[in-house]
Length: 346
Image (cartoon, rainbow, N blue to C red; front, side):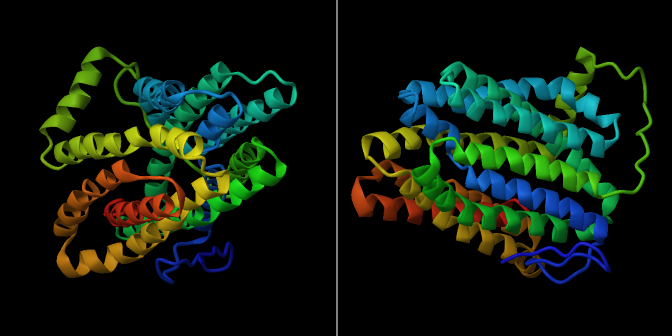
């Protein structure tokens, strides 16, 4: 179990007892509360779409894809907007946007006015806010810590992510069974509010980034950005790797939700357990990333774990009903997330 101590000499966690400072402790606390809220609310939108709105595979797939697709388009103007602004106010604003968007779902449900269109709009808003938040938080982390501490910090974030994913979904599924389908969405929304308060508590001063050039986004700037990625010997393969591997992994998510919750009749807690239990592997991977990189080399470990990620999802084609189906999902996901837990910090 990871934990954070804020104040005094610094913060400690699963990735080691190396102190990274009070301000990093608050940033980690913000990340942790948001991660646990997201874990608790795992699969909430497809679950509501299937069980409440009786949506089919095409609608659930559209729900999963729309947010990411529109969010990716919005990321184009958001990048320059974030670059020339103080990062902490951006992060707080994105947390408040995510809180308001998520809370609109239980409000509409309580009034009997929840629709699939609203789920789509909320998904898009949260996806866009996620992109802006992640861009700002990544840049802000580099201002808090020297380069030699970034792997330690990222390993702690990764450990927190997988711990939250292990604990959150089964508890969220049980909460849905006891208190209703929007319970976990309320918890997730509140976690964004608490994250914003933690970021506000970091304190200190942050200078406004200096502007270079006109500050306006032009077509030539976009082409230059793509040219930089596609001609960089390190960024190019990582970029295409992320598109191909993550895209194929995520493509199965909405279909599995319909299959497990609809066709195979899994209960919400079983659905959560099938995806949460394997995340122990992600925690193991995050813990092992640093020592394995030190022993075998970072590039070699990237190659090995990156290749292994692509092998596991094939097993999901053979999922069936009952206990054997749950066991198979857990086994496949365990192998996949262990490799992801190793690859991401590296």
